[in-house]
Image 1 (cartoon, rainbow, N blue to C red):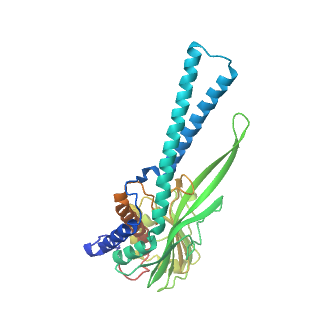
Image 2 (cartoon, rainbow, N blue to C red):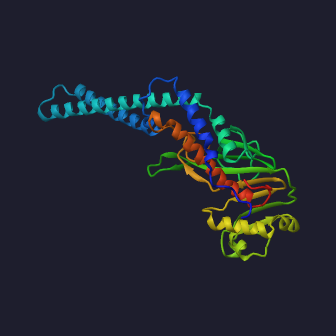
Image 3 (spheres, one colour):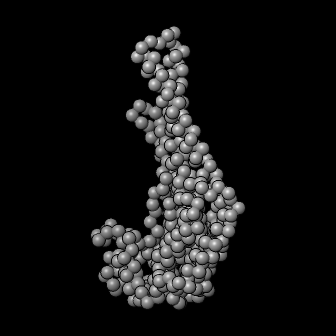
Length: 351
């Protein structure tokens, strides 16, 4: 690809890390408990505490009921009842200890995250990493440029976090949607059960400002080497390798060839060779939607793949480093996604 993204980060481009680290450390000065560990703030520890409390309560209730139901206990039965009582008390105590740990850690984490200005941190990072060419407008739960294709229709849909960005030749919104699917079934005992599944969908949506794309088209990965099983494809181009990778369905055969010129075809082949998954691409004139492969998550609050958010898991001293690592990971993610926009040679300059 001739219009490459610059993936080499210079020392000058790391200025944002120093600025963010200093700001985070300054904000943390208002908190006093610097010995707290955030590894207990996850919902897994809350679930563990709930299990221990429930098990302990079950043992205690069973022991009390057994004592009340029996007029007198002798020998081995008395020993068993005392053991059950001790086990129940220990489990209940463990549950209380870990619930207090979870609550303290989680509550402290939420207070810290509220005072940190993540939007400012991401703006600084984008300015430095892209030399001011791409700027972050805001981080929100709305796509300023909404996806015009590939949005799931089944179940409940919620927008997670979105990076809304601008460049002199294009604007884009990069973020994820989460889908909740509910499945009801009858188990072997005739009882009705409900199971929930969650999928996360990454999207890059863009509007090109410096060129006119006078075609409506969908470009998807070709599903099969057998023509009858391929994705809908009404366009045959000169490259057999491209035809093996991509299926193109366009409303104007002349204009799609003006978009998919040999240089663009070569770029897309290069990306197709190295990418783990080829996205679905929709062109509605100057509005572009890239739908990337969905992945399963554990629920609405599962942070996997969500942009511009962080769950503190380490110690107090790790907070600035954890935040900077998350920002760098999101920047690298955006660069990989942006390659698909750059491949169409629509931006007009190197980034």
